[in-house]
Figure (spheres, rainbow, N blue to C red):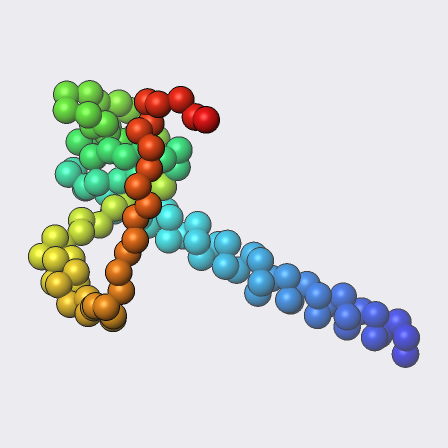
Length: 121
């Protein structure tokens, strides 16, 4: 009877590891692969090393990125970390305008400071 309970515990641990570790990692890998395969010219991206660029051309497993005006480099698609979505400036301005003043009676006091060029006493 003791042998069966230990086998059940081992099987339960394998199932838990599958659902907590293996399955989510596979899902992330599939999403990353789909994102890399759906790249088009003109897309703003960030590489896995943190380089921001624009996709210029796609060639099989490679992608040509423009990192500055007139500066193009060739990367493998696997180096593309994420696609950057453009921020809508109009929506951002509306969000800023909708901020309410909580307390308009608050007074900030600023201490006068010595001239930075003068030596400390």
